[in-house]
Image (cartoon, rainbow, N blue to C red; front, side, top):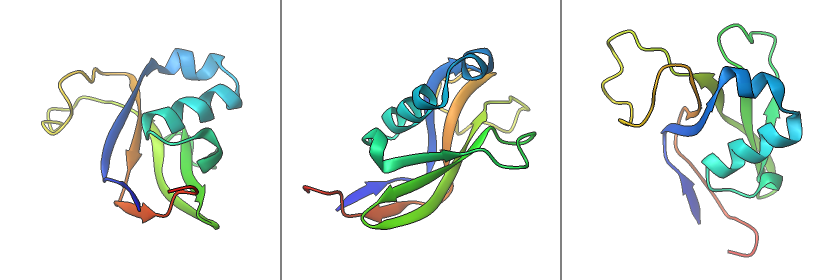
Length: 106
């Protein structure tokens, strides 16, 4: 059983980087942040991209399930739970609720 905990997973890149790379690179980096193979992750560009850059879907274990979104860190004084290495404007994958799934070959 594989578990992805709720929280923020840094990609350690900027919005400028996100806008310059193609979807394959974005998907690979989102998967790497979650410690998953790229085939297990799908990024979906939502109509509400003003707030989030994309939704993140888990496509593993024979199911498709939205698990979070890709966004940037904004500091407003209420972000005391951020990891210290996160900085304003950095791209992160935010997992909304923990998810468990059976990884193929596990």
